[in-house]
Length: 103
Image (cartoon, rainbow, N blue to C red; front, side, top):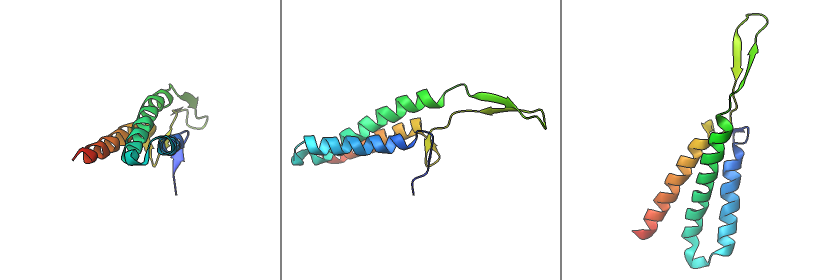
């Protein structure tokens, strides 16, 4: 079960689509590099767009019963991790796969 809020699911979708594209374009000998490129593309997408979408001002409302101000900020996350942090996670996974190929 995939849990997301807002546009957080796009991180996984971009990872899957880019992996599918690189598998079909690159030769079979470079199969591991398909993973690396897909993770780097998904990392860049998640980092930049996650920061853009999650750092909005938010909307503030006044609760009529209590008089307290409630601020609702945008939340684009996947498995309760904000989208921009998935960019870091995908980047680290891409680097680990790249290093394993050289060792």
